[in-house]
Length: 469
Image 1 (cartoon, one colour):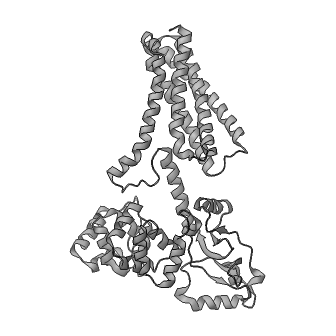
Image 2 (cartoon, one colour):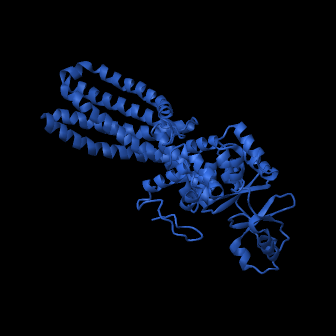
Image 3 (tube, helix red, strand yellow):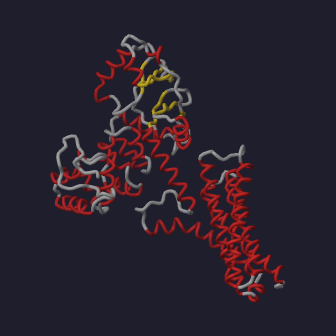
């Protein structure tokens, strides 16, 4: 259990922030709200100043909207502005709108540049300019440069706090330089970058190698070639590089190979979570920027589009039933069993589609293995179709005491599960080829295919088998 006594002074505090399940305790939030209402800065500092930035962020989200900016103002220097990187975008934007530019500027100036950019990037240009103008010139220029990079690029993700030295420096000079830098050195770093007079990246020396070397050794003799990314590279590609090569950090260079920043694993973890979150939401037809803190009207409006598309495709599937109106009137059992075939096909297709969309996102599925994977999924669909066809056919035959009906639904089930497997793999591949996001668009098309094929196969086979014209 994490409690609020986790501080440098180890001063025991009277309340704990989280319960045994890791959830924010209601009584803690109530106590903080009381201190805010009373304007009791001393009590508020006692409760919240020692919290980790992630826990201050959780506390902000648990408070009422009006109390959030007041908490920051009352805590003053005891509030860690990095906590604003831990809250939902909509919560952060509401808080920043309520705070004056000087307060925000004072808060972000002590942050690492990547955290400062994360806080400022969603603000409109006027608000950004007002806050940046309140910063010292050096910090203002660095942040403006990072904000000029494309959204979701390595340039937005990187920190501009790093240590770069020339290749002719010795190990001793570097160590002495770091000691003299004191608080001006980065809060945490893993390596020393070696650059030429034009600030072009030559290589790096990790700290473990540095401290094991003699003071008289020059960096150019112990430096290594360094994997790097460009500032304009997409953050998803950067995350994939970390995953593939088990990196802890990676330098960022501009088009001239000049060192401009560094990306560390803590930032990449956030990217991986963000990208996975987007994929999961997209599969459900939900916009990637939807959050629990959003308003009812915003959520309803954002979901309306795909629900409308689903309505249109539902009419398409229902029109297939209209083609077999006479058959349905003559044999009521067909109307009872038809949804089973369509539903089971849809579930099987969703399984295949989920695997395919994720494989496309991670680049595990592509032109080189698309045919093999498609064949594999087709065989899986056939085997499951035969298995569930037998089970469904047996159940239908016993239910309606008609073995012919059991054979019909068994055949239709097999056809639809094969069709579902093909749709689940081919539709995402096709959308990817046409540069549409498979996660966003696949679901509605796959469901339509399995509904149409399921109804048509079952009712069509039944019409022919029983002569229901």
